Image 1: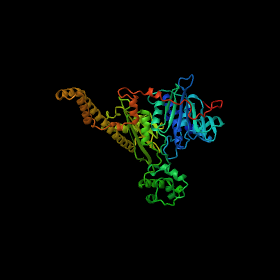
Image 2: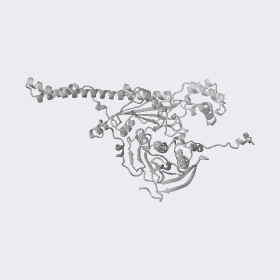
Image 3: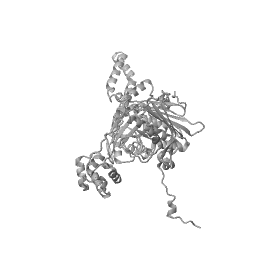
Length: 573
């Protein structure tokens, strides 16, 4: 007998799910697609949080990263990330690490690495999902105490579940440390933790990072500059990117008593002239109470706001790395012979301010064969996946690199010893997915990237043009020099002038005539590159040594702040 299914029967099965439950089953949406990427994602979320916290507190970051093997588990790893930031107050620790969509950045329009309040709590969720172990968090805020929590996420409620908490006295300083155990895969090369950290060091030259890998090998990414980028300021929304539903919500929740003050208080660049014009076009009174405005009135108001000429939003919400700092970062990590960098003036997409920065590094220890290296960044964070889907990549491929003395096949990266680093800074980066790996292809963003590439490319073209001319000059000079001895001997026989005297005069004449052609390219070369070349650290005729050079970097063997207690309550050595 067939059982009849009714609406009432189906209704009994309906229930809400928490965001934590959703991502527990759909972890791939957050970047936890495979073991290698999952390990990298956990490291990235923790490091990004540390750098953001330090920048917000105007502290030069020191970040310690360690990956330990878990004994008896081939794919088991313990991740430790520690910083010297401001720390987290005790009441907020459980929710910061144990509740998805909890954070300070979602509702503010200000450039920062994180945006949604998902990152580090998703790493805790992945940890408990793959190993069943709780995360351990340490925090100091400068009050002489250290707060220690072990916690999990209750996925049915999306709330932290505290396993244990402890407070210890007598610990000075500030900082945060998180320890999680996960299933992962550690490797080197492309899309690896070492690659991520090196690229982070390039675009964050004000940070010092120490990394200890599972083989206990230590890498020290030293600070290249001693000043932080300019502090970004929070701004109000701009009408250009506003949607009707958002406007209706703002009207319902505003504290403003009338429409005039609502427009003035809730939006940026709303002057008296613009407000008057908006009210006229929308046929609404300035004294109208915002909460009394209907949906149709709100629709007219939005159309008026977006059809009145309003200044672009303020750009002090952005924090550019800066041309000089980009050069220092590229110089420290890549040791090229020539660097050009450009920071474009801010622009706007959908009411959101953004700017583009480009750094081009050429020669030195960069690989001479194969395609150029492309480093993509969003708010100083490296983007290692989904390269082909990214607006940055499309802009690079559409650029005509042959104009800058470089080889390029149609629709591909240029060929040669070149590294291209491109950074988009924005209050709201238009990622293509929750994984935050690629930038959406807005035409204004692609245009700005191209303009920055062209400006930096012209500087590189000037250098490569002079280098090519100098090479031809040297070739011509060596050809003449090859015959100076024979010519000097023949002239000596004809004139009875000593051969040695003629030899010296011919050499001087050769230097005078050919030595002045093409200009001096050494003035354009990086100073550190010239020193490395003199000391033999760079051999342009041989393949560059990459990993071996990195292995010589480590200098520090202890934790940065040396404050984390062992189980017996004593400090680590």
